[in-house]
Image 1 (cartoon, one colour):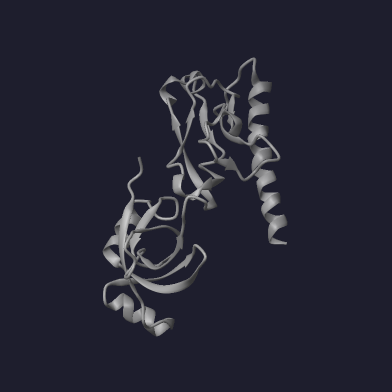
Image 2: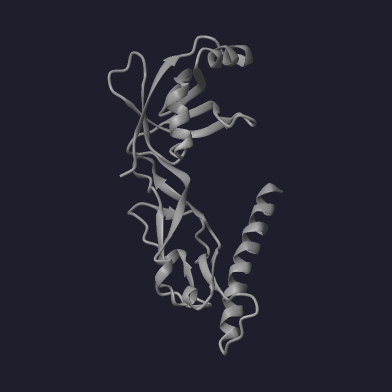
Amino acid sequence: MAQVDVFYCEIRETTGTGGARATRRDGWVPGILYGGGEDPIAIRLRSKEVSLAYHAGRMKTHLANIKVPGQKNLQPVLSREVQVDPIKGFPIHVDMMRIDDKTRINVEIPVRFTNEESSPGLKRGGVLNIVRHAVEVFSPAMSIPEFFEADVSLLDIGDSIHISSIALPEGVTPTITDRDFTIVTIAAPSGMQSEDDDEVVDGEAEAEAEAEAEAEAKEGESE
């Protein structure tokens, strides 16, 4: 089970650029708490707590709790936007969204590839061609998966794993619904000759087509 961070927060009295700078000088990270049918409020979080969670990769995809002044119970939240200092690499502003058991959100979940040592294709010199390191899904905010697992133990050269082969928890669905998109393929190494070259080419072409389709979709959205 993923670690659940608990952030101590205080209401931020001063806002704007000057107020944010003063907050950081005092050892805090400025932020906004919003959502849940309540008005947004300016808050500040302890820099050490935020930095530890951020550098451990637990921001944006991990459920957290914050101690809100005047509120008896902990408030479940998700970090929806984390601004980072471009030079020093530490968080300088965080937007926190209030959540409950009815909240559903779009979120990217990383994919872990397992049993590479057992893959026939990799044993024969094939290359693990990762098409997607993460998959965007629509998920209940209170039960976001920590990761998805792709078992490549049965893959030979030219084989692939699609999203339909990934076990998704109940209530979690891919945001792409119009095709069974590719997660990973086993590609042939350069210069390798075999009787199943046509299958290898087909597998590589499939991965390339997926990437091109994604690029075209993003271009269409930007227009």
